[in-house]
Length: 368
Image (cartoon, rainbow, N blue to C red):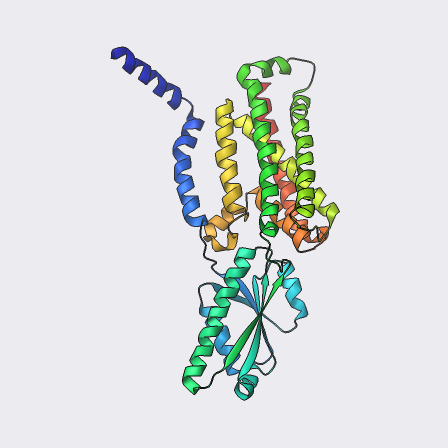
């Protein structure tokens, strides 16, 4: 029994002496329950709404007030030209546009019928379906109120228009996210493990005493995964276009350019992980748990970021996949050009520089 307890004590020492692994093992369950608790929700809250109201009558004001008072909507702008709607959606400034016909209340009183156009961004089909349903309910409630008050069978018809994805294909939503996840995992996880494997087996020191400079060794490790990721990029894009029917509506050159940039970001992130870990297990835990979950939960791949608490929206800003997925959606689905993703491109370039500088500095300190 004493020998058994001694072995148990020895195993505890093995676990506790690796502080990074301990932090992951104990801290990650706490982080996961917080992330899943706040990020996973089917509700769509505070959706940005723009209003085009040329009537300015009592009925339109009542409906607008009801929309703005609803917890699911936030009226952000009143516009005066229908041509502005497309531009607002392309800039990501709205999820729903509500357009009232001319002389709305007057037409409703005289004919008993009136129309409201609901224009939604269907690049995320789930969000588009939800926001149009909520808006329809508000309109239906107002119609019911009028019918009870005046004892007249009024009929307000919502005319729903879906931009970018009128057929509501789910592939339009998950293809950009899956593309970001694949590139992140292949580049970051595999690169970190490949370098850590050399350190764990002791061969990295042998390589470092060779005439080849350390930076060349690291680049030699990264290049194969860059090539593999380029192949994955081509295969996923071809399958998306010709099998799933998701077109590249915008700049193909911009899409390839931002994808190659994201591959470099992911490779540099894997290099950073390799400088922070000493074992393949720790690298796998960091890459799988620390990278995979944020990519799924905080990048907008599955759950809309605007539905999350403010502090989680700020946290999502440091997730490279968030900016890549936004750029891919703009180029593939919304049909925009490369000039429209300068913000996302600039942030990815900045992240690349930060990751490379930090990881190379720590790598030189630890191994040279």
